[in-house]
View 1: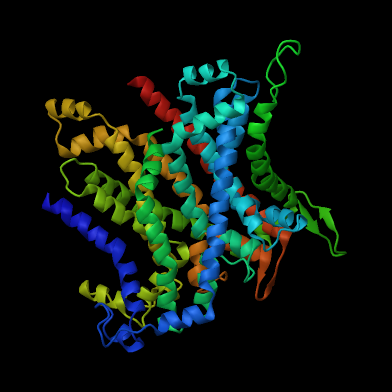
View 2: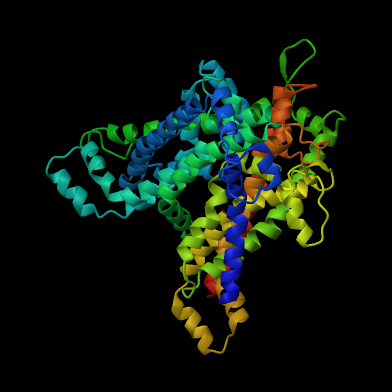
Length: 268
Length: 311
């Protein structure tokens, strides 16, 4: 048993140590970073110079805003389009139901990036280059396959009596859909959280579709900033810490949902 | 997508269309259509007159054989294979080990370990890449301090052509171990206890129980982890771009199909962008990934099905 804990603790240290190291050193003066990297900042070594450079030279609050808009926007669209499609697939028997389900599920295994050449041409043709809208649409397309697949499974489990009773009472199909939504809340939460991090952390599409300063996301912003300030250790450490902390906070808030989502997928 | 109806009895179920439309439209427009169009585009080229003309499989032949493209292509492909092997041989066994340890009911603090160990996976690749670049930097010496314990001399690991790719692969493994860990964990804890009990009663010991029973029962998950690793690895780009730039320094030692794709399509420094060749690279990546997925769906799944029928 001690052996088991030793391995687990050992690996946990390996997993967390790099991040902790970066964060504590981001608050230190330059000499201290090199002289004594492993200890937290003391009164004499505490220095916010890195943070000041970052906040002066790069508009991180703006990047955060962009990332938030894109992520929330995509999640909202995935929620709306995904639940509606899942509902239709689960609820109604129609010719092509199975085929459509399969068609939508194809996207689970195929990486969307492969079509980038044409996605870019499409975005240019639609006049959506350097817009957050382009990112939102692409991420929605990316997240829909798994969302529809998972949600339709859950919706199939809902007993028909509930819905039929409502129909008898004269409810429209749209009302029924609305009624069903709260019943799949756990699955819904998991699907949304599961998509949240890949969207927030993505580098590829912001780089290719919306690289302008106006539309930079945190991930892309950190990337370009780090590229420019590669020799300024304080600034680099601070920007890494600044970019990491919101993600970690989001993670702590949503870890249970996220983990449940991953494990639910494996059991199938 | 109309339901089979007799027009006299039921009205056309528009609501079904309304429900399906947004998802199908967005998905088709931004995922399926671009993929097909990109494949179609890879069959064209720009002739010396500047027009775009049909070229059949000419681009593919160029990519695989012509001197301006082939060395980079085969190099990237080879690197992807190395990248993939390191993930299969390091990431997935470690994930399995951690999952096995965390699946035992007798280990206290399982949830805490699980959450903490999963943390690297939620960070963006940019952060991971840079953090490790700093740690491995000879200037800072963190890696050196650590390696000294094992008597290994520190080197500029990411700067040497011989070590850059393996080390970068290990960084990627460090980040993503959480995913196979979670998938294996879910599968392991879903094995009913009575099965294990029955085996113990029949005299099976620790190792035997693990390999013959628990591992055998999670073979489907092993397959899924394998496919996910495969698809993910052949799509990898971000880590190399972040740490080594699109030129996959040093000297293309860390070039993957993803970075090759980016460079070919957009051009970089000395190389002009070439959309049709870029689409060709994507086409090859698609074929590779499709092959892997088909092998999984047909080969592995059939095996699993046969095993289940035997049981």
